[in-house]
Structure formats: structure tokens, C-alpha cells
Length: 129
Image (cartoon, rainbow, N blue to C red; front, side, top):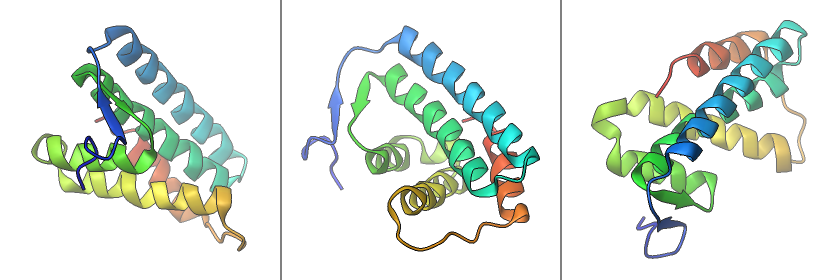
């Protein structure tokens, strides 16, 4: 998947301010995920946990001078440029919960997220990229 050729990613100048803002948003979303989990909103907690890690991933792209147009291309970029630094587990986790988020937002079936799954997502969201 060449995400630069198909226009899903584009090069720009590295942006330290956007890096900082993305990391701040990552922490805010992690805190939100915790609050949602504590109030038994497990599906919403998973979405916020994912969003926390997505923002952390975006910080890497902003650091590299890359702008994304979709969640999927962020994962593709990480696989291509950060596999050894991050490890496949973290990238796979991001991709798995990207799909869960998509299903939560756009799916037509009721989600069956349990407490254990939400807790696992929350714990993983605490591990920084």
C-alpha cells in the first residue's frame, strides 16, 4: 500500500506544535477512556482508548512532517516506518481497535464489548508510542 502515491498521506514540514498538541490530546482521551470505563461505558471507553493511541501515532507523523487523510493510512505508515521501533504488537493493537472504532461508529449491529476487553484496551492505551 503506497499511501503517498494514492494521496492518503502527504509530506509537509515537521510541526513541533502539532506534535505537542497531539500528545496532549492523547492524554486527554486516555483520561476520558478511564472515566468511561469506571462508569461502565465499555464500548465508549475502547473508542477513547483507541483515540488516545491514534493521537500519539499522529504525533509521530507530525514529527516526521507527514499529514494523514485516514486512520488506515496512519497504521500503514507506522508499519512501514516504525515497525522495529514500536514493535508489531503495538501497531497491530492500533489497527484492531481502529476496526472496532469503525464498527462502533458505522456498524448496524449491537456491540458486545465486555469489561475485560475495555480494561485491556485502557491498559494498552497507557503504553506510549
